[in-house]
Length: 118
Image (cartoon, rainbow, N blue to C red; front, side, top):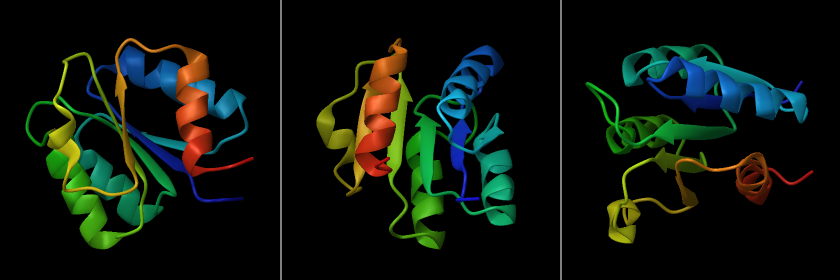
């Protein structure tokens, strides 16, 4: 089985919906509710893609992305947020994308496929 997609969001319902969509599309998924949990989950099973909520209590998505990239420099990142963020917020990262919440299933799967082709 290929490595999982890591989905990190502090909103349990949103995290579950995203994970369900990805799993129904055939992707293995691991989930975490915050940055600290995500680092533990990723250490146990390194991801091939990470979807990170930008706005979380404690460690935000950019901080988490920085930690993940230290461990896995080539890890693609998809940042998600209901907040409108300037594009330069992600200048420190190559191989990343931003999804504005709310987004639909097709947008999520298109973004995923841009990093993990079928």
